[in-house]
Length: 196
Image (cartoon, rainbow, N blue to C red; front, side):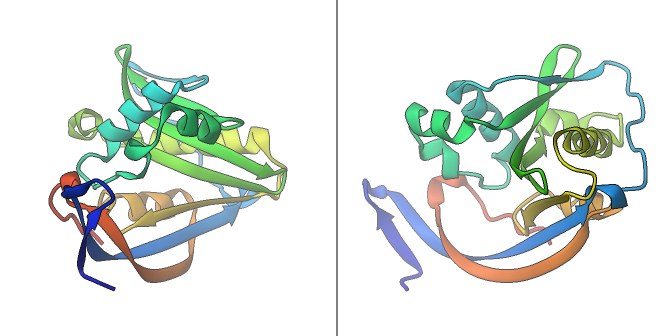
């Protein structure tokens, strides 16, 4: 494969071939023993349907420092199809959205934390442990949506926030698979950020 190629729209959409390390983590819901839902003043979690424009905006806010790009190129119709049947959550701070999560129930025995992340504003906040708190709430939501012994799983990569993998493991996810693959990443997504 070529180390760089032009996208279908010409040289302004050039892409570079980069290695990405993927980490798959999972556990059965009855093996998550801790309760990480500590109270944080000013924070609340709202569950509701995401419109394509809202999802794209949150996706960009959370992923802009980590070269999240895949859904930014999708049409509203494609995003609406993706969001169908998903369980969507927004982390709010003082009535402002500062994070989001999406749960996908594949069956009563398998639930995927498809997306999870905080905005730079939330990460810069002095209230440490917000990510752990939000993740703990998603574990409880998964328990509500699936069977007691359902497999709850998530992927993260070396391009995500450096705290992602440690936090997932802290709350009880176990690393079950690691592999490296090559993918073309658009240059317009910014500088390289390999954290793990």
